[in-house]
Length: 191
Ligand SMILES: C[S@@+](CC[C@H](N)C(=O)[O-])C[C@H]1O[C@@H](n2cnc3c(N)ncnc32)[C@H](O)[C@@H]1O
Image: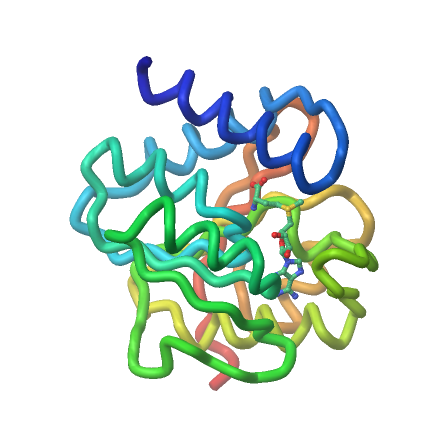
């Protein structure tokens, strides 16, 4: 099976098993492809809200080897570790300011369909505006000065305004199947 087909299958299986829904993974797959076309195989990459690691596994198959994943749900992380032993995974929620990769700085941080999430009992995660702000500030701390952050979330709030308040600058917005993929850098005017 080729890489895209495996990614499509993994998406469908994840959302069916854990959310009990059938999804159309077009947006998800197109988003990851857009990100992939803008990064390099030697980049050090963190996915925040990685679930069972399917996006990172896709990158791994394309030759990316310096991969890290964080998710608040321990059950997903256990599954991710079992399925992808070459990728470093940790359970954490940055809104609590716990940083499991404390000494690491990344060339790329990406996050899809995660910050928008309200309460889901299985994951026991509820992202409040204050929590999201703490997560984005953590992204700012953990991205290298030359690094890029990719965020794709539903239109549940004014994302550009939130990014500015967290010291992040939007350098490009790509519309992927109706959802904005924001590409961000650290802005200089915040320490
Ligand atoms: C809808 S899934 C998205 C999975 C994947 N990013 C994708 O592209 O399909 C949301 C994931 O984000 C995780 N999540 C939500 N809020 C989080 C938070 N504050 N910190 C860490 N993980 C979080 C959930 O546990 C879940 O695995």
